[in-house]
Image (cartoon, rainbow, N blue to C red; front, side):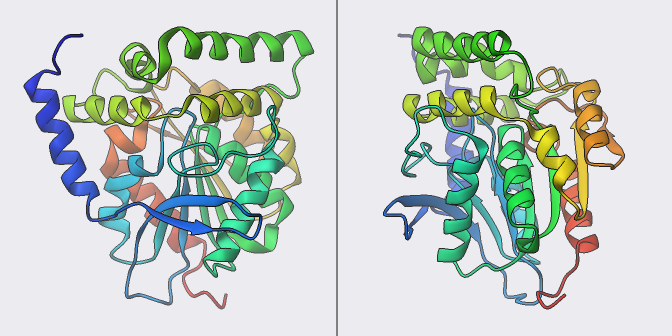
Length: 296
């Protein structure tokens, strides 16, 4: 195996130094499972907490740039989804969105968060949508970034094919290979070298079993169906250069949610990593519009 180029090693060192300000934490849930997460705590106790849910090839650490800015005005939390980081996997080998939404509820209960703003990226949008549909009183606002719609409404053949393709790729490449071969798809041509290094780093850390369960979730989920049942504040945004969940696909989900689609110029699928200023502004604006004080 060739040595890691020094530039990439330096980039990783810089990113990990920034991440050290938001160390991984772990909490035990009532369901006898553990959940790992990262947090930026603000002295502003009036602002609603912000909860960030990552996608299939990522983790809580991917939101470090949002922690650095948004943590100044409110409590910001990002989980490692079940099966990621030190979080206990869900029990089902072929889980549905409700399995993850239940763990999300248990985690928020354990942290004493009764209501907050929920942001889901890609696969995280599926979990966020399921939670918002099941527990609308807990969600002041639902913001979906490059949401994955899932294949639950498709034929069994399509669902199985999409699932098996991901599982075969995981088996062939492993997490490190996935990071090397697939991370470029997450970004636009405008992404910096630092953003590319950060996406690779996050993807290389996925745990095979958790990723496999997430592949099943993607095959089983129907985000549009959940959004049709949601009645609260919802916004949907996507990068103009997103090749994973392109604007046309996100437009259909925005229509299901009865909300306009916001398209971010010069951004790919992992837009919040490669265009942090634009996405952090979108999140901040949405949080403020969703209500500041907890009592509202």
